[in-house]
Length: 566
Image 1 (tube, rainbow, N blue to C red):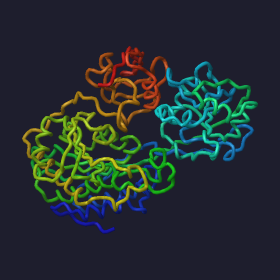
Image 2 (cartoon, rainbow, N blue to C red; image 1 turned 180 degrees about the vertical axis):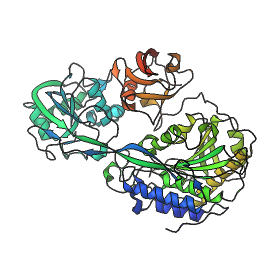
Image 3 (cartoon, rainbow, N blue to C red; image 1 turned 90 degrees about the vertical axis):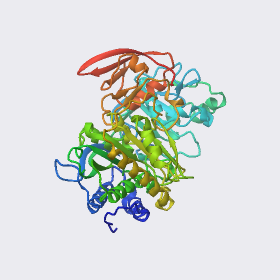
């Protein structure tokens, strides 16, 4: 693809050309575990060079900030279930952990524990046993959906003391083994998990039959869980693969001798879902290219376009342009940046993040995190008054994009977002649905805001917004009571590190602090964010829980009284 040199104008056509390439079949969805991500990174580098940007990584003189991340999950060669045939009778799932197991089998219905509403684990002790459970929910009831996710079933079985989990399809007409990659998670959930056929389940249940037990549960949601006489021996062999990936960073140095060491950052993530996987919202289309035109070729092309447009525009402060990898893994790229910033964070005056700006509908634009600097609201209103955009402002915004990493480090941040749509995280998010003219209008607003910030005599001061953020993925009903910590997405091994603790929250009232690493909840180990979320979902408002954190190498225990979400 031709690379166009920088000009002073936002070009909708150049913008769309870059979206087309980034969302092309050639780049195969820019998955973090695929070589096409590197191809996308080099394309962005070439664009930065053509637009006259200097390398922002002064340590090695390149446009790349490399870091290592767990990017994928593979099936090893040692998966076995004694007496059964791999690929025909059973297969490991991508949510599984590695490990040998043996034990008596316990049938636990649908593997759901949600007292007092419904509890398949009531009346049985599965400690040291292998749990056999149905996928789905009793009678396909949607009321159980928050407790029926496969990850939740795994964590529930682990919390109940199981040594492994065997899952079986609830649809008698479909006994196909589930795709390994369709439910892969990069975190260690701590339990071997196999998918087995209904034939295997019937053999383990004999003389009972799965069909009869399932029908009895579905009829009136009664409990038919039982410890069986059968035993199984097996081993799960799962490999979580690490690789080096990179953020791409370029800069336009400032012209003012006193201000050029201060920076304004333009950011967007360039990775997407590759060929699908667990985060795809079209699981039946696994293996198809998830093009990610709006998410987030649109934002990446926007960063490139702003770099070209601002090349010859006078500015006193240095402008840094960042394209992040690893966002779809959990903000890995931006977390790596703020952990080892190319420009000191105390010299970073603002971060302007663009994530999905390519499908503005009815001129509506969402701008989040406006409350992180006192000046933001008035600046935005002034710079937007002559545009056709109808802006919805939020003091916080959403936890699910890269500006969060900066806000947690007390960098004033803004989030530009044109909204979700039916093609989100599906192969159908293609370049032909991008509205380049409206996206160019968003970019002109971002440009004006940045230049307004550049003209300020004093840098904006960070404001810690007291309003709790929205949970990742939307509403808060399924997230249990309020605890009040914000996880550090870039540091989640062997516990959950708190990037911040909300003022007035139960965590703060209990004396917990930013930097603490939660390692236990009521005596149960917390290895990752999944463990923490599971415990929180199983708790109620008013519960007093004992939390253990590591603080400066020492264990600190606190009693936290959970509250209703504000």
